[in-house]
Image (cartoon, rainbow, N blue to C red; front, side, top):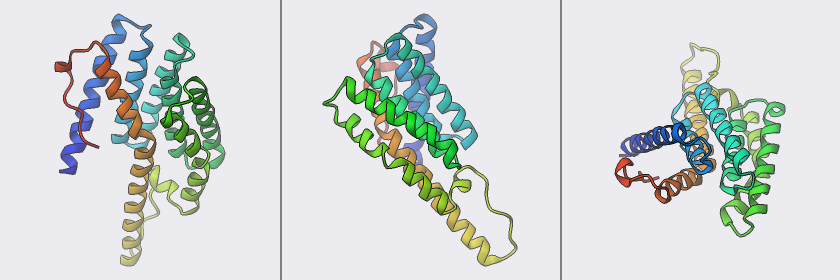
Length: 211
């Protein structure tokens, strides 16, 4: 049942991405569409290998920056950009390389709050962003960073070692998914609400899959 739900989400956001891409071709100055496009890309990044996830997140960042060049005060784009920077940071297994992304994320979350001070999601994101570097550091300390980035441990002929490796792979996989779920959940909701409020006929989009 879970795999079916994941497939539904994949199909939903892939269709959303295609619609945004087509809309951009006819109206490249639509900041709302660019933000929805980026939200779909962030969701889709969860289904990719880590290198492909990083590329997709960078693409989303580019779309959001383009949206902000059109409307610098667009708070939902600022907030999504904070999520994108956080996502990319967690896919980096070196603290010094991840730090600038965490710092940018905090700045974007703060800007989103400044533009919409009563938004509880923005406020919570700003609060949590302060804890993100510590969580990332703990991931590296536990040796899960390389696992998350697809660089598994050296091959061992020992059965017990293989069992430990399998357990560690499972934990790192679960952790990666939890982290993505943490920073992406509301992005998906925002993306869907954005589509619902847009002028796109509902018949072009499948029903929003359950989370």
